[in-house]
Image (cartoon, rainbow over all chains, first blue to last red; front, side, top):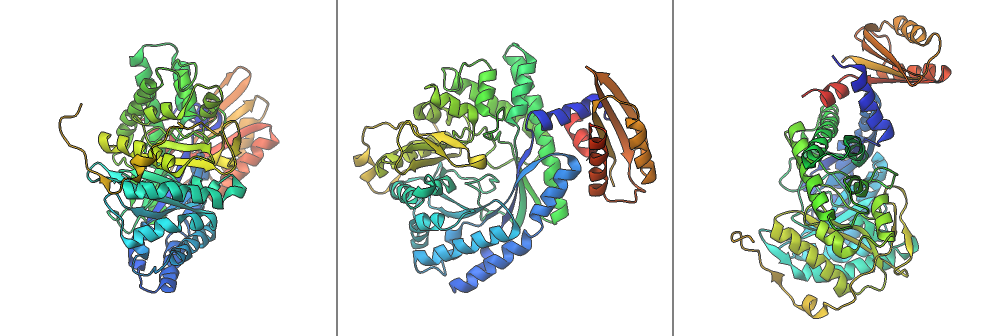
Length: 454
Length: 90
């Protein structure tokens, strides 16, 4: 039977270490909404989302109250819209019509983000994919709750460099169209290599075509809990450190599994996966950087950071896998800058650069995330940053992503305020040497060899 | 309905357990086990309850207990037992 110290431990995790379930995300297939008439398509999409997910928020709130565990976000992911809109959209305006429908549906059901304004172009772009990508600046500037993601590479196909080149300009245009809000449009746009079909986290969530009609995926969190456990474990050897992280990850994941099972049962929707990612928030103590520092680093970014992060990420997976039979999504520590107070402090202290962050992404998900860069960064440099990150994912058979914000009118030394969970960020400097001639080349980088791995 | 854990944390004073137990009895909620301790001047109590015959919904129970807690300057939480079972038992 449960004893008083176990009850206290759980409730301390929740009250003092910010333990929460970060998101319940309902994946909804929109393939059966497809119609060659765009207005009919929009009406089908609106009806399906608002009927399937009408009780999502209420159910999340009920579960949260009954178990005493905060469930921060309730969200929806949908089939990549480039596929859904292909038969109906004749212009970028038609795609904007669809995203406005998604935005309206998201507001109607009370969720805080909807993901899936996406295209999967790792080997090439169809006219529909191209049109959706071209519509992104307008689409993200005229809507509030919809997120966009573009998968431009994979280990099996290589990297579509035409899409990478195009997206450098798209990101700059999105920044410009949302310049009155510190270029916040770019916060809702992420570029992927090896994007998973079942990711519950934004901005990269979409409901892959390999999925069923509807599914419940849950993203856990708990950097604060891991940090406290490491602090309480003292200066033990690496065995003690690993054991501490694993045990904590197990406990966190079991809570996520409980919430996922309950949500699936009450919503009559199959359970999909638990995403084991440690997701920080700007709240003090809820930081992945703080975990790294509790292991013995003066600052995140110091030598040893990549090793510490690799250890952390691996132990979280080992503990989490034991707690849930169905693990998926991104499942790794997130290292966004603006959403993690410890990361922000490290950047301000001069300890953390984009280059070090890039090295860190080799050993964890998900990539260069929520990084503000100068607004006058060239499109080719942004494409170069994307290409580098995609190459890391492609070669290492892992998901990588880029979510950078070239903040219009701001430069190194300025700070950007996105608000809420999106946090605030110091504008970071970018390597000034040009990659323009490299990015100007057309075509794709071929898939890598799958043997001789050194 | 699965079992409920009621936990009370706060500064010790006369009548905390009596008040909670009276409330539970009024609503036909059976107390299966009680454990309590005092550490650093703080009162900790945990009750395992069976709400099978309860005459009110979980949300009302939780809200009432929270209100009783705030009247007595302690924090009272009601949570379903599964969260503790799953977290602490393999």
